[in-house]
View 1 (tube, rainbow, N blue to C red):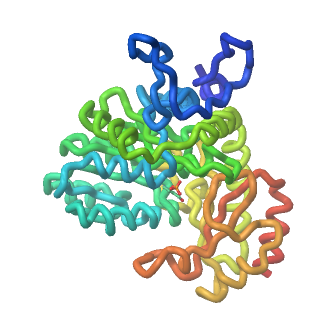
View 2 (view 1 turned 90 degrees about the vertical axis):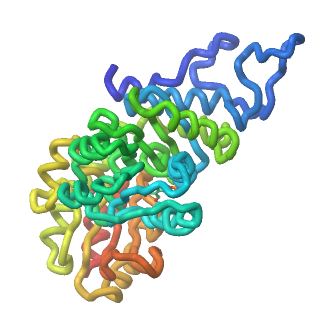
Amino acid sequence: MHLETQAVHAGRRIDPATGAVTPNLTLSTTFERAADGTLPHGFNYTRLDNPNRRALEQALAALEHGTEALAFASGQAAIAAVLQSLAPGARAIFPDDLYHGTRALVKTTFARWGLVAEFIDCTDLAAVTAALQKPTQLVWLETPSNPRLKITDVAAVALLGRAAGALVVADNTWASPVLMQPLALGAHIAMHSTTKYLGGHSDILGGALVFSADAPSDTIGHIREWQRIGGAVPAPFDCWLLLRSLATLPVRVRAQAATAARLAAWLAAHPKVSRVYYPGLPTHPGHAVSQRQMTGGGAMISFEVHGGFAGAQAAAGRMKLITRATSLGGVESLIEHRKPVEGPDSVTPDNLLRFSVGLEHPDDLIADLAQALG
Ligand SMILES: Cc1ncc(COP(=O)(O)O)c(C=O)c1O
């Protein structure tokens, strides 16, 4: 079935007891055993499994064309679950432009557990090949990357990573399964911060991992075990809300991406803007690769303004309709001056503004940008 149909139907069924069309919310943390001690409905304790989480996981697996999905309490919890599955002392490759929270996890907690991490330009296949000369257990991809929208060729890097015997994981948060399906391109795992486009309304924190048919079964086993024993799982209500949000995912993302394409072209022509990072623009260095592996440029734009750090801060400060806030993927447009929020090891340019394009009318967004840029 097509993505739009799966988004509405996967993980859902008419409730046999009541005929309810929308799923029930099962808040119970515990489930009754039969007299013989068995669990007749297959549920035991909500940390282990819950009807709403199971339904969500089925829907996520369908949308990413995976065989199994595991839902987590946040994107960071999902990333940590992958890193937990590696043996101590494992070596891993990460992109040099990467969500700063992922970088922080790698450099703090997991460095203490012996993870050896190398940050490289994953858009450069020669650099990836060179980095894979040493035994490597994990290749982590993030494309488009946060915040500079670098485009990694997922199929090419997955091929290299697999040939080197590494687990290949793609953080698909910024594209969403609407625009890119990393498992079909060769990744073993598609990772999501479901807080972003999948949730889509800035009111759910969550994460997910979706596994390909040939993902190593011991890795899936370790991660499944960690999800249940570690316990960083989403609450039933968050699962219910997220399943509801998935129904509109394709429509939201396509509309947001169409607006973003128009806004990126407008920003690129603005005299106060010195650089636009948007893979849908033909001038973007990853444009050709993005056209091969994505069905649109996405709804995230980063841009640099004249006037350095102060210029970016002032422009963000003048926004009226576009909200100054972190995060992305919601129905409302958000803007963020990244440098001050990324911490001391940030490699993001001082004058970069990260813009999450929402569902407002493009003319209203252009009017706000125009008055704020001056
Ligand atoms: C690309 C990417 N991955 C992971 C995360 C972390 O997700 P969460 O905030 O849900 O833990 C984010 C958050 O911004 C992100 O942008």
